[in-house]
Amino acid sequence: MVMGNRAPNKLEWRIHVRNGTSEILQPETGLVHRIWSWLKGLLGEFMLKIWNFLEKARNIAVAEPKKVIHCLKVGVTLTIVSLFYYMRPLYEGVGGNAMWAIMTVVVVFEYTVGATLYKCINRAIGTFLAGSLGVGVHWAASHSGDKLEPIILGISVFLLASAATFSRFIPSVKARFDYGVLIFILTFSLVSVSGYRVDKLIDVAHQRLSTIAIGASLCVLICMLFYPIWAGKELHNLIHRNLEKLADALDGCIAEYFTDCSAGDSWKKIGGYKCVLNSKAAEDSMAGFARWEPAHGRFNFRHPWKQYLKVGASLRSCAYCIETLDGCLNSEIKAPELLRRHLSDACITLSSSASFVLKELATTVKTMRKSSEIDFSIGEMQFAVLKLENALKSLPNHLVATPSSTSDGDAKAEPIRKTATPSSVMDILPLATLVSMLTETAARIKEIADEVNELAKLAAFKPPNTKKASQSQSSNQVDEPSNNEERTKGLG
Image (cartoon, rainbow, N blue to C red; front, side, top):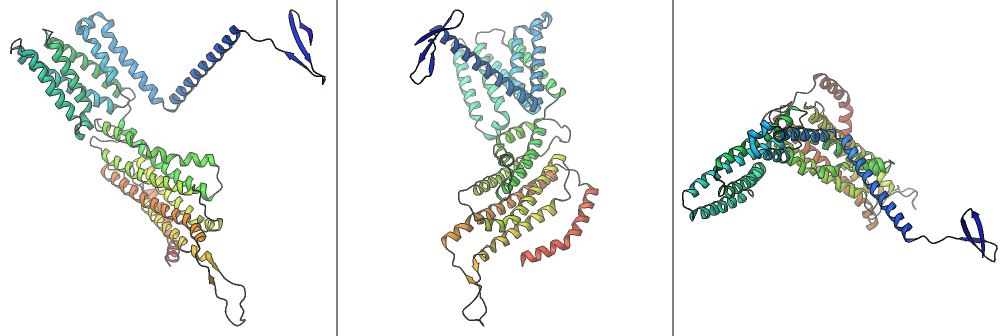
């Protein structure tokens, strides 16, 4: 062991081993140093989490600037309502009940115009009915004597609160007036309890109704006048985006199975059907809020929002088929390469024609204009289904073996059909399942087209473009002879 001096005021201990190597002994760190290192690591991890949170918030703001605008509108509304506290004339006009206006803004202001109107109207109706009943019950109880007054108030609260709570289980009431019933229960209970102690009940009720009306009016005005976000338009955009996602998902499934495409690109396309499966709650809420909105843009007052729900249901039905198809293609049982090549062209043709139908329907919904090519595209998809079924029927021919020579020279060579063994059946089974799911997917797409056509009829979509229709008709007439020949061959 040798002690050396490597730097001024710093000792270094070395240990020489027999093989000629040396090791440096490091001094043990103290308790304070270890605590300091742990604190530095903890602080660095905390700062990293904050940075990741800010990065996610920035990505959300960049991807959806509407949410940032909504936050700014809420801030502006609260600032205006707060003036009732900060300015003496306004404060003296409404009294200490200005807090109810602030509470109304916080509770009522929602992301879309429909949701804000829904809460404002329900809050106004619930508050007015509960306040009127509360004042009436308080007047009747006050004229019944000191002994009967608390009994009457307690019985009225019990009966009305129980009946209102039960009404929330009725589907029609829950769909449109659930928030109003909740406000009714809250307001009636507060008025009944406070009215038993407060003498000037009518004045208090008037001030609270006034402040609530002020807060609700500000919410409606700012929500509708400054960059309004309509629930109906959001539902409309969601439907056409789901149509595009289904088209990409169908293309991605078949492309991943039959072609050599990158897994990352195919996964981005295939993952779209999962968004369609999870969109039911958003569609139901948007359709419910859209009923409260006035006419705006291309959406009239009685726009068929229920038909959008039917289109969404048919989209989810098709998405379930694509999910099953994706699971079938990624199963552990794989078909032989020879049989896969035999069906690849027919499967790719069917998926391409089916995805084209979905994209054409997406364009129809997006532009609110009827398509001039949808009928022809659906016919091509159905013809592709027939070709795929015929290709599947010809699969047993691949199990036929023709001998090169026979024992008798004069006898003709006849094909010898192999017996279908369990292995050959298992080879055909994945492809038969694939064809079945593709055929079912095409049938579901036909149902989507029917629902979209009904939507176009009810919503009075614009007629198809005449110039585009004439071009498509001329091209269809040119392709019709060859298509007819292919159909006769396929059916034969």
